[in-house]
Image: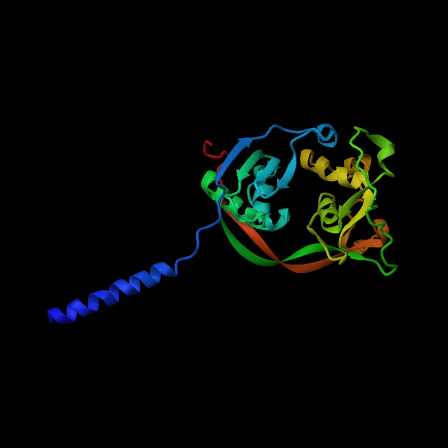
Length: 270
């Protein structure tokens, strides 16, 4: 009996070693990260080019300037903002986040690093569901697209301007970004299904409207007064034409949703 026990022991040790050898790899994480609450930034400052706003990722750092917590979750899980279901305050509470990528790490893994940061610093907990949701599909009309591609010699103009002079000025945007802008003027997600790749020239006030909608919850008359692209059309007339031969169609599409179960309002200390 003793000899039998002696021979069984190595088998148990080998099995345990095999189990440990098959453990899942560690979640990517920043080498070090700073998270600080960010003050409100006005549109004038944003378009002056002097504000620390937006996302910049390179081989060394991931820099998020004045980014709403909702958008950090959006980036971390590689989804659109409307796919994140959480408290409303997440859309307005902004943070400056600077994360140092480990040596040799790919910037393509930065979203997973942000996931780790959110879990550690905000104690974020989520679960994923899939549902068919009503959306507006941004598509090309029967007449085809008349959008102009971004000119090779295009240079942005950072002067602070307002009013009618912006109405006819064009700025480059991808159709995915343009669909995101349109989301601010309708009552459901807008999904780019144009199939158009690259950047195309769209009116400046289309780009401005997203920032306006983040700061003020506008009613229809106020949207019109501020020069938004269009008023939300009733479902029976949702094929109303937009710029460049584009239109919106009412559809139902399967959508992955990130549901926030818990998140702290402030991060743990740096």
